[in-house]
Each structure stands twice: as C-alpha cells, then as structure tokens.
Amino acid sequence: MNIGILFKCSEAAHVCDKSQYHESSVFERVLMKLHQMMCRVCREHSSENTKLTKVIEKADLKTMPEDKKEDIRKIIQQEISK
Amino acid sequence: MGLDLLHPEKWVDKYSDYLYNYTIVRVNDHEIAQDLISETFLAGLKSKDNFKGDASERTWLISILKRKIIDHYRRINSNKGKAEIRVNYSGEDSEGDWLEERVKDPFDKTAEDSLENEELGLAILNCLGKLDDRQAQIFKRKTIENFDTEAICNEFDITPSNLWVIIHRVRRSLAMCLQNNWF
Image 1 (cartoon, chains in turn purple, yellow):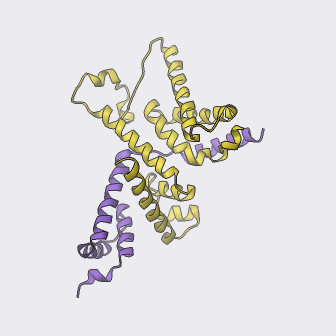
Image 2 (cartoon, each protein chain N blue to C red; image 1 turned 90 degrees about the horizontal axis):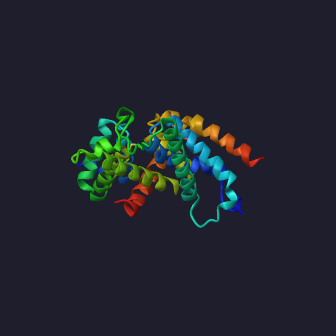
Image 3 (cartoon, each protein chain N blue to C red; image 1 turned 60 degrees about the horizontal axis):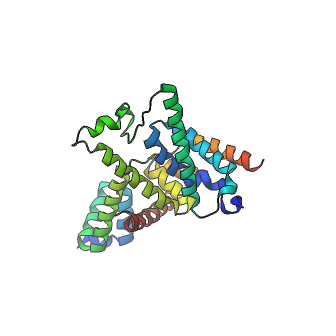
C-alpha cells in the first residue's frame, strides 16, 4: 500500500511550512516526501516555499525592538493629543 | 487636511520596520537608526499639513527620513571637519570599510550584493505592509525574529494551529507579491 496517498495536500503543505522553521519531525518529513513523489502541485509548492525561505534569509531583515516601538507610539500619541 | 490622509497612529506598526531596514544600512548603528526614525515620525507630524496625498504615506516618510540621514552625516562631518560618507555596510564587523576602499578592488562585489539585499529586504517589507497588520506581525515574530511558536501563541493569544494557518497564508501572499514585484 502506498502510504504517501494517506497524506493530504493540506497536511503536506502544513509540514512543508513547519519544515521551513525546522519544526517538523522526521516521520512527518518522510510522509511529506512520499506524498510529494506522487503530487506535482505539492512538489512545486515545496520548492517555491523553500526558495522563499532562502530569499528571506538573504535579505537579512531586522526589526525594530518592541520597547523602542512602544516608546515611539507613546511619543506620537502625545503629539496627536496636543 | 494632512491628518485626514495620514494615519500617524498606525505609523509604527506599518512603517517602523521598513524605515529601520532602510536606515540601518545607511548609518550602521541601531541606536542612531532608531533615533532617526523617531525624529522622522515627529517631523512628519509637525509637517502633516504639507502632505497632499500625491505620494503614499510611506514614500512621504522616506523623503523626510532621507533628509534626517543627510542631516546626521552633516552633523558628524562638521564635527570631524571633513566629508566622509559611508555606504553599504555588511555588518558591524565591517565598520571602517569605506566605499573608496572597496571600489579599489574590482572583484569585491560586497557593496553591490548588499545593495541588492537591501532592495530585496525592502521589497519583502513592502509586501508585508500590504497584509493585515496582525498577520504580518506574527509572521515577523516567527520568521525574522525567530520567536518560539509557544511565545508567539501566548503573545497573540492564538493556538499553534491558528499560527500555522496565518504563517501559511502570509507565506503564500508574500510569494505571490514578490513574484509580481521582485523576480
């Protein structure tokens, strides 16, 4: 019996997302790969998803610290209410 | 008239990360970048009547920020007594790598690479800016700040299933947006 077919596309997509953050188990990844062997759409989605991860890593994005954002929010609020 | 078109109460959530990434590669100092952005928002509020709505809110804020960055370098240069402009830093370790030094080496692609990375970063943030604020924030926590799933779930009061649904939606939207605007 082909167990890859037991995995739905939505489940494969879910594991694919978790894999981008290294949060999927080996078992989940095996099932996902088996599913992808038979499902071209999921195979392509996985490839695009991995590409997106690499692009985001390459961009080396930074976020402003939350406490600083809060400070600025307060300053803006004070100015608006003047 | 300005405030009718502007939404300063949303500026921090919508634009602070975009402006931060724009600034950090130009001043190479997190504290200075934060201060310049804070000054930009305040200057925006003070000159809100000048905003006619011809450009987007973000473009208008960027134009103010550019002047703030130039003023910052003018202040530094007037202190030093000579003109130096640092462009395209690859990280804190590269402090002191001046553009003039870099262009001497024709095989050094670092400046070009970091310019492309900066544009890519801004394109990603631009795409995220088009999404629902909360979803974009959750995505940033997970993907850029590398927060644990549990910590994000606690902060936003959502279940792990909700989180992964949001992550999936944002990733799909982001991929489509980048496909149209970057690749």
